[in-house]
Length: 169
Image 1 (cartoon, rainbow, N blue to C red):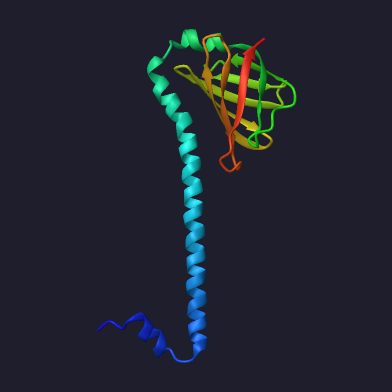
Image 2 (cartoon, rainbow, N blue to C red; image 1 turned 60 degrees about the horizontal axis):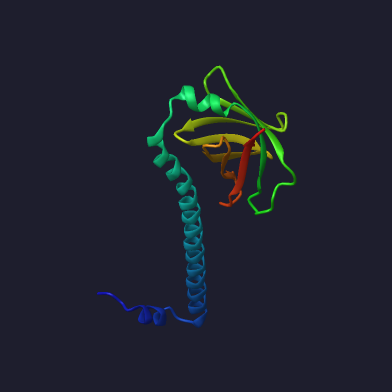
């Protein structure tokens, strides 16, 4: 036989138990709300990052032979962009791209202050690098004029993304 909740609470005795139960229920509701809001934020971040990788997947069909795509990216670029908080970079920096013996693209910003490694997928360049002590990923669209533009995200930036545009010098 099931006992209704109200009857159960009434059988507990003095009201101090009711206060403890009410506090426990309120705590459970607060924690549940926090968990749900955290899940929603995490899902929103995943969807934003997925859209960048979806761009890469769609463009995978238009693959150029490696002989054509990677060597055309070798050179120096003027870099402009925004930080994840939306503030623009102060002035342009210089990015150098070289082809390593392994076939990967090696990237150096400002004479090696920041370094990365990249791989071409169709007309998209995916780059992993280390910036300000944190791992970052850049997804850059390769344009027909030789410039690149895209978004980047850094570990622990809570889902915010920066932007960069690279123009060959």
